[in-house]
Amino acid sequence: MKGRAIKLSASRRLVGDLMWFSIRVPRITVQRQMNIGPLLKARATREKRLSWTAIFLKGYALLARETPELRRAYVKLPWPQLYEYPVSVASIAHEREHDGEQAVLLSHIKGPERYSVAEIEALIYEARSLPVLEVKDFRRALKFARAPAPFRRLVMWLGLNIARQRANYFGTFQLSVYSGLGAESLNPLSPLTTLFNYGSIGKDGSVTVRIHYDHRVMDGANVARALERFEKILNSDVADEVKGSLKVMPLRESDRAKGAGR
Image 1 (cartoon, rainbow, N blue to C red):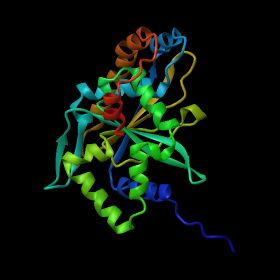
Image 2: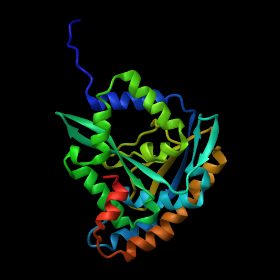
Image 3: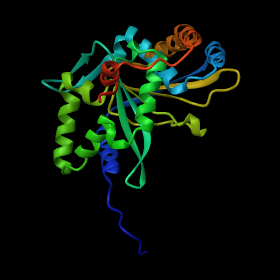
């Protein structure tokens, strides 16, 4: 059957490169059915409601701060070992239009546990609303995608296996959700130690939360306990912050640059 050939765009090449490394990670999934009723009620008290993406991201950052395994990575240089980072770096997937197609691009927030939920939301909003090439993470990735494939794969392999650089360029964990579209991803891939996502949130606060983890770094029991703790953090620390944050505070330019990598 005669069809037509479609040249791979920069964004599709980036996805292909990430998947090439991701399929080599022995990834396991653990999920927990949570009830975040207290957090749901706290969010409802706000005149302007904060996004669930920012809320869950702050909760996971707090979880990673007290769970060292979530800040570790398996690296191969100078020999196979685990490397633990002092703070988390969140990698957030965004769907943006670029060159006439919908592209998935990643932005990063260093040390998200240091920011309020409102500040995290401001950073996410920038990544989703500024012109694509005005976001440093997007611009750098799209420029890199124009390089020859062998060069890209070599540089990415080095970036993933030189421990001190890995978090700067890739992050320590990833968040990717479609719950706003009424769908859930059951088997997402990422080269990072953990990727977490969640489903649609029921009116009673019920929600399914999953952590997809690199089995070389941690075991299922650790992840199960982390999910239990995650639920408590969402319904206590994060709920208290959401209820107490009466308005979105603008970020200082210095903090904005550090968080968004711009």
